[in-house]
Length: 249
Image 1 (tube, rainbow, N blue to C red):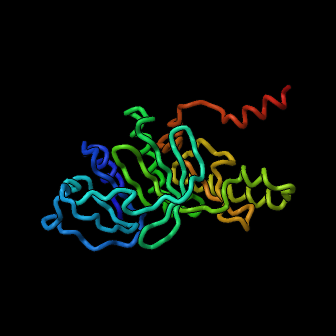
Image 2 (cartoon, one colour):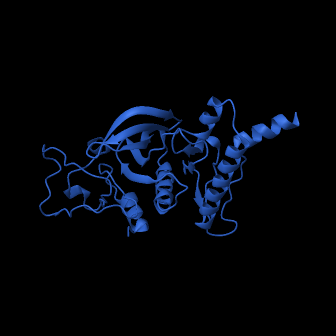
Image 3 (spheres, rainbow, N blue to C red):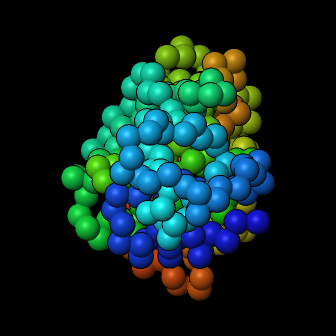
């Protein structure tokens, strides 16, 4: 079992910005052990070794191992969505040819203190890798120029885009979607986590054949609730605020 708290501290305090940190989900297949004594000099020009999902590399020994970067393991295919600081791409694993989604966060668009927010998101996602209502985190890379969060690929898009394309959305579909959403929220609250940014764009559909089988994504604003009043930030989601204003006019 991965000791997540320990690994986060190692990554955050390593002070080695040249290292790439890769974290595996709970229960991921283990890889052959690498002998540190026999590891190649990272300054050598030898080709990068292939990597597979599930490897956990501690940054305390990364200086003695060849540095594995996101591009050595995955290949970007097409852009899915672009945000203020992050871009979502479809990518494939170079060895297994499996398809994933990767959230790329450019570090030059972040403040130094924002690194903690990214690591908080990764830690929460890692703790939820057994939750069937959450988009799973598969790999994580911390590099000089960007963070890479490799996620399970939900090829159905988000609920907002789906509703825009549909001419009819049945009452039964709405009931099933809300029922699954409430179960997802209940599972998060049971784990002591508040998402704080639930909206149609963050509800991803499994495939194009279903209008209701969703998973929750984007935990950038999420927080752990240790006490009843641990959430002190007060705000109203902009979609709800806009809806209420229109209703009152």
